[in-house]
Image (cartoon, rainbow, N blue to C red; front, top):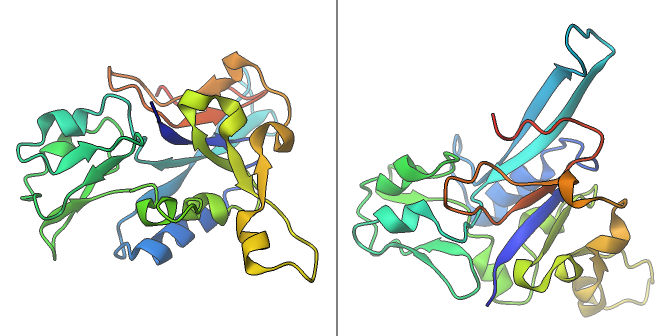
Length: 219
């Protein structure tokens, strides 16, 4: 089995929006629509009655979670929304009739109707790049190296981010193939510091690491 996903270290995310911008550019996402958006969570009081500076805040990148048991696939009347063997959830636009049942069933509100084309769109996890052995654009362009791509079925050891190649004689392939393992690029974390968005039976695949800050993702 394979379940491609992204794990984001929220303690490293600075809210620069590079992932969101890069996604829009490489996938031609229309103005006003997003496959990946970054939410600011907070500032929230660290304890009841707390005021500045005793507050905490973090940024939360949000897009399709490429769920293990996606609700959008269940309700699609034409089979346009479907799950591939690599675990990603895709849309066959030739079958999509724009009914938006999938958008209404998504727990995270990450699908939208492209009114010009009459089809629903969302994050594809840069399927066109995965087919060429590349990383999703939001991972490749994360300057903070906060986003990591891998296969959940292979564990955290499989998750990587782009590496840094400082050798002036490096070839394009050297730069392209450079990878840094997540477990070498992030601070230690425990299982209770790994979170997902609310699970309503869909089993979201994307995960978020958050240390020393109260997770607000269930709200």
